[in-house]
Each structure stands twice: as structure tokens, then as C-alpha cells.
Length: 259
Image (cartoon, rainbow, N blue to C red; front, side, top):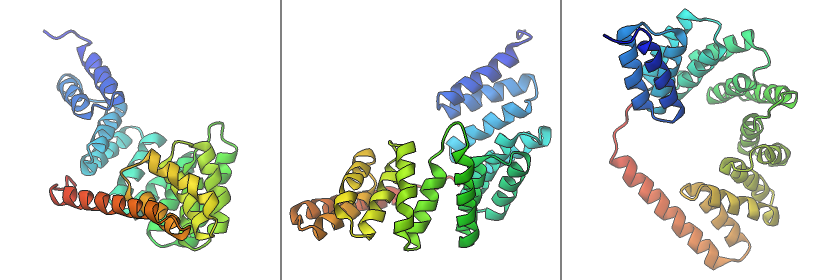
């Protein structure tokens, strides 16, 4: 006979496997545990996050909704439901989830920032700008800082040809998250758009170093080298860009989507 608490041990082991980025093993533990005792809200949430790691957003949403039926006040679970709906391009459902998180937790920086992402995806640019700005104001008084609202607002300003406004925001993103290749790239992109090639160079070089398989920083670095007369360096970056894009196209053509 099973030990009377072996179900709890399996749920705990499932959580440990999740923390170790082993989602399949984690789900196997949860499945065994659920055969002995029905899962609690927290167990369903962790199983959902396992499915997120496996890019199975349909299953993730189902488990998160079940978890929230049991514990409607879990703002973390509702935040993750919003993230899943965003990944599924279900932006209205994502907005509803983030709005509810903010109703329960008005100082939630991540929810406000992700609300901005959803509004931007729906081309509601002015409202998205306001959401990012509000997330930044919330972050300024937070005990631990989050680079994402600075980065997302800076990226959007770059897209809107407002690079001068973006520079300070993206500099803050880099200061908060110096290992972020996207922050380095977007800051370099702002400076490149403004013709500040000397300032842009180290940021684009660092973006390439942090994420060498991303073609975008290589391409922009190549353009910068070309603009500054470094034709050999430019040609090398353009060649790398082409190789990376060809490899990505080959890989995409040989894979089937799990969504």
C-alpha cells in the first residue's frame, strides 16, 4: 500500500522538477500524485507552467483556469493566464486577465507592462504608450526593478521614429539588465537611427556577443560598419546575417508546430 503522504511527496517532487526546468518529468510526477489525491490550486498552476515550458498553451490555459476556479485571488496564476492568452494572440482575453490582476494588485509592474504589450498588438498605440509609462512609474518605487517596461516603451518609440526619446529609457533597461541582448540591441538601434555611430557600436557589439545566433544585431552592426567605411567588417556581418537567416529558414521548414 502507498504511504499515506506519498501523494504530497510526489506533488513536491513535481514542483522540484519544474524548478529544475524538467517539465516532462514534473508532469509525470503530478500525474502520479493526482491518481492518489486530487490536485490543489497551486498544483494545477505548476502543471500549467510545465505546459508553458513545453509551448503547449492550450493545456496551460486549461489548467490555469481550473486553478483560478479554486483560488480566484491568485494574481500570479491570473498573470500567467494573461501571458498564455497573449502567446495565443487572444489579446482581448489577455487584457481581461491583466486588468483583473491590476484590480487586485494595482502596483503590479509586470501586469501593467504586459497590458501595454497587448494594447500595442491591437495597434492601440497611444494607450499602450500610457500603459508602459505607468508600469515605469510603478517600477520606480518598487524594491526590485524590472527592465521590461523601459525596454518595451523604448522599442515602441524606436518603431515610431522617436529614437531620441527612447535612448534614456533603453539606457535604464541596460543598467537594470546588463545581460539583456535585446536591451543592448535596441539602445544601439536608437543611437544608429540618430547617426550616433560611435555610441551605437559597443552596444551592438555586445548584443552580438550576448546573442550570437540572432541575425538582427549582426545586420545592424554590418550597416554601421558600412556607414563608417569598414567594408571588410561590414561584409563579414552581412555574411553572418545571411547564414543565420538561411539556417533558421531550414530549421523552420523541417519542424512542425506544437500549437
